[in-house]
Image (cartoon, rainbow, N blue to C red):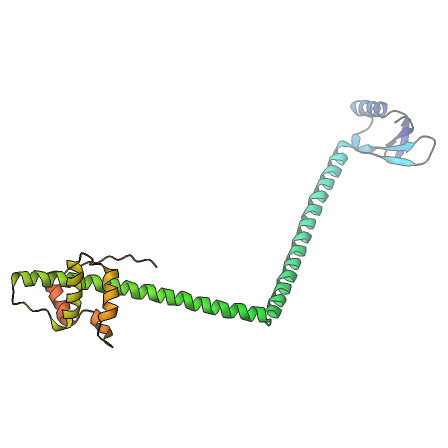
Length: 233
């Protein structure tokens, strides 16, 4: 501060110069206290000593606060503008990336590699569908096996009660297989399926299913038959 001079104005008229800001402030404070002038009537400037170069204006407390608030508001506005511009730039970049990826994908679809991938995918999808179909068919076959097993047991029971009881003609082959496996203590779905595939009548695919007579026989003996299956492949 030694190289500066402080100028005091009263209603734009110079009323004093000081080489010390503290002394200037004390003078102003005393003048206001003695009602020589009001704070609104004065202003202060700083000049470099022995020059006409103004360093800066001495601001009142209210002016300094206003400047600080304006600067803070400007900073916030600048930050918001930068963020907005960054968002716009990011959206534009994302749009360009998507367009570029779309273009590359369209070009890739024309290549032999893409065609090969699609062909392999179709084969794989078909294999998966075949496995699902095989699993479903196997589940249905085991369900039929269990139904026929229940029917076999009912027929065995009837034969025990009535020696003249005759096995229905359409169930004779299945009954014989069940009976054979039962005596060998090997009665299960896997063993039955192996034998049935070998011995079932040609072109008689429905023999593995129960007929109307068999269904009615089961329903009379046990109306609420429940079968739970869980097969994994």
